[in-house]
Every structure is written in C-alpha cells, then in structure tokens.
Length: 474
Image (cartoon, rainbow, N blue to C red; front, side, top):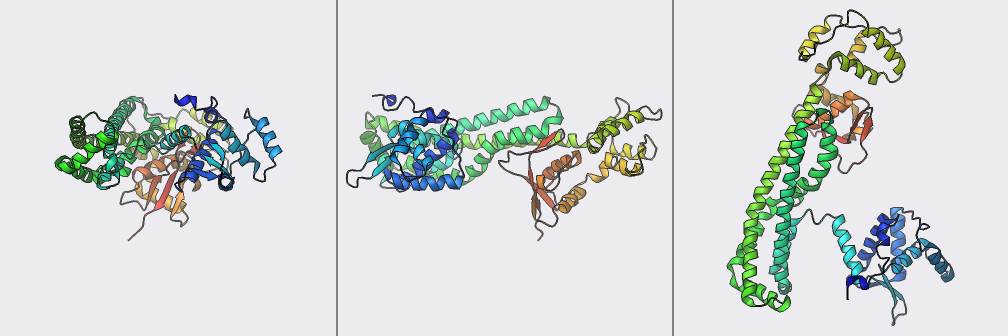
C-alpha cells in the first residue's frame, strides 16, 4: 500500500491555504501538546483548551470564510452547539477533514481523543526541521550526539544506525561548507565589478542575511569545530581500536538492520569510521577557507564603504546634497541654485582632478560660490557648514563617537532608527560607527540588529537598523 492511499486527496490543501502560516504553527503546537508528555493521543477537550490559550497568546485572527468547507463545517458546529470557541472547533474539524488529525472515541472513558496519523507526524516533523534549519546547522552537534550514544547500553542496539547518521551528517557538512565557500567567491567576483554606491545595501541586506546569518555564524559559533573536533576524534579513535565495541555495532547491523553478513557489516562500519576520521581534517580545512573567504569579502566591502564615505564629487555633489538638506523649501532652493550656477565667478574642479580634503580647505579661503538668502535663513558660514565643506573635520572617529553619545541622551543603548537618523550625514556616520565601533578611540559601538526586516529609509538611502551601545568603562 502506498503512502498516498492513506492520505486524503485534499491533504495538502492546508499548506496552500491563505492561512497556511497559522495552520502550520498550530499543527506544530498540536504535535508538541501530544508528544511532550510521551503519549500518542490527547483528550479533545483538553487540546481545545490549550489551543484556545495559544491562539489568544499569539493574537491570531483567522478568517475561515475562504475555505471550501466553510459552510459544511459551520452547519455541523451549529448543530452540535459545542461550548468551546468556534474558531478552535472549526480548526480541529478542518484538520480532521484533511486527515492531519484523527478524532476517535475512547471505549473506556467515552471521551473523544485526538491523535496524529503516521503520515501527518512525518510531515509535521519535516516542516519543523525546515523551520529550525536543522539541515543547515548543527552538524557537528548531531555527529557528536550520535557517536556518544555508543556509551548508552540501551541505545547500543541502534548503534549501526547512529554510525550511518553521523556519516551522513559529515557528508552534508562538507557539502554545505563547499557550497558556502563557492557562494562567497561568487559574491566577491560580482562585487569587484560593481559600483560602490550599492555596497552598503549589498553587504547588509544581501550578503549578511544570506551568508553570515545563514552559514558563517552558525558554522563558526553554534556548530563550532573548536568545541567538537577533539571529542569527535576521540570517540572515532576508540571505535576504531576497540574490537568489542565494534562487534556490538556489527551485531546491531546484522540483527536489527538486515545486513547480509557479519563480514559485510564490519567492512562497511570500518569504512564509515575511517572516512569520518579523515573528514574531520577536510572540515577543518574548509572551515579555515570559509573564514578566509568571509574575511576577504568583508575587507572588500569595508574598502568600498570607506571609498563611498571619503569620495566627493565636488561642487555638483554638494549642490545635490544641499537639495536633500533643504527639504522644507525645495522649489526655492532649486531656483537659488539655478541662479548661482550662472554666476561667472563659479569655479568647478577639472574633470581629471583628484579631490582631497586638504585642497578643499585651501579653496575655502576664497569665495568660490555664494548663495543669497533672506535674513531669516542661514548665513553663508552656516550654509557652507551644512553643505559639508568641513566634513573632513567633522567625520572623525572622535566626533562620531561624541555625536552618538549625545544622541543617546544618557541611555546605555538605543536603536539608530529611534535616535534621529535623517540625512546623508547620519547615513555615513552609521557606516563609520559600525566599521570603527570597536576602536579604542570610540566611546560607542554599533551592532546590527539581527532579523531586523524594517530598515531605515531616508531619501535615496536604505540601510538596516543598528543598535548603538555605550562602551562600559572599567
């Protein structure tokens, strides 16, 4: 009998429904409610109470009206006149119709019991694995746990399967490391050829979320080779050397897993053990390559970010920046700029001339361009300061540190979004405080807020939210 013969044709309807995210979460909750007490079923009334509390805590608002079975189930519930919340009743009836759960009458207590059929348990566990990314992280943790089970007299009967699980995890870990290294190389090759203006977005929104959070951080921190290499190597050496333990694994393979003969089982077991022992060195090499690849990409990103911060497009760039600053009177500013550009004394940098901040300070002594505003507006000195003629002096590590320390208003920490990011100056400061935040000259440091989907958008700039922290002084 095939798997699908026991499944209702509408089984997968739950996974394509408008409410699929909520349904999956509630199915996982049902799975936990039933199996955390090591039981195969639960009273329907008790499960309804637990789900009702869970839905209230999560503040779920479920719209069932788009479900094809809405009318039929509603009529059934109305005829039964149950006292429980109608949403929970509808939910359980919907899961039952699509064969995600079974509802049976207990013959001794005459109470309705809810259980999960085999195919439902398999799919829920599969979904849970995907959500927790068990196929991407935790390989060495699982390998170590599988091999440690050899010390348990109860679990020794399944030792052959534990060896196979550890062997498969080694192969998956090596494949993941190879693929991650290849992806970083691709990022690097593409970024070398791209314009620097997008590097901040590419680094934080793309590279950081795709590579660092998904692979680099879990591999180097959550699944640390430093923590598990020696324990795993020690267990493998013991298994290879102690014939008595090896014979127990052979017994497991022959008696419980139908391996043809003891010689075949022993040969296969030794091949897997030797392969895993050699795989440790391969994993160590690939992890070192991962560190180097990630560091190389970060260096490239830092260089491009600093180039973006320090480069200046001359007077034209300053005028564009002025437009961003003077948002309250955009039309008037454009008119003033248009008039000023037509002044004969206006001087521009040569096309191939290299701009430096020192050269800008020398030129500030001469009146290269003036703007005329009414008395209520900024004077020339304030205007030049706002345009950014003194940016070289302002954008130092000390000034950035003092700027954010002032923005925090005495607080120890604060989100960048909440302490007043408004313009391109703050955009550049946010880059520099992240790059130099651990420098000894700075009194503050910045940390990227993990899983922060809501970035900061000001003008043409979009960048993620940072957490600004005061450094603890000893």
